[in-house]
Image (cartoon, rainbow, N blue to C red; front, side, top):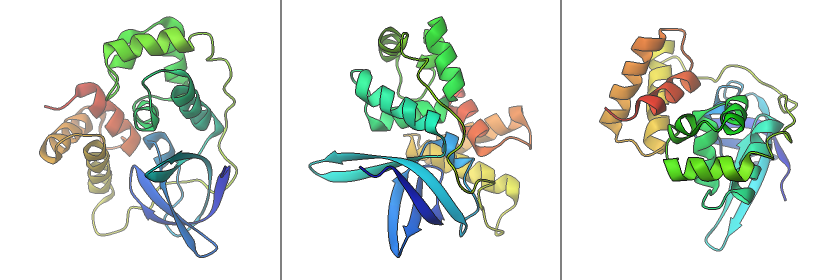
Length: 208
């Protein structure tokens, strides 16, 4: 099992990053909750990881906090019908504390508003996790953290909109719908909205 990676952050996308460790580039899938905590590209990063091994692929998932990884593992190991992709959607659609509150209060509407989580899955999550939500630790993984490096070709605002749009496309939206939905969320939230906030608001709005 690979417990963590520490190395230089190379390619950065809202759902996938590459970390160079001693000359080897590791592709890591991440939730949006971790994306907003990444340092700028080229800087050192430390990610907690979880390796999923299947016959056709070895996939590495990364998290900037222990609570994110704990929730990811709890979902894929405890809730029937929830795999790694859906677990990442959950972490991208709601904070760990928000998820815990929704489960504790039986808020089916809040959970079913997450991309890929229908009413039946939301009900199953609540039933199977209601007594297990007190296990989470917290705090960031040790290492560098900061604002994601977006480059200087486009404005900071355009970069956030582009990154949020790319994240929605990765989550199954069609590109034109994703852009329109993100722009709608941006109009509601204002210029200070982060990529994570834009994506979460967009997931609640759904495709136009």
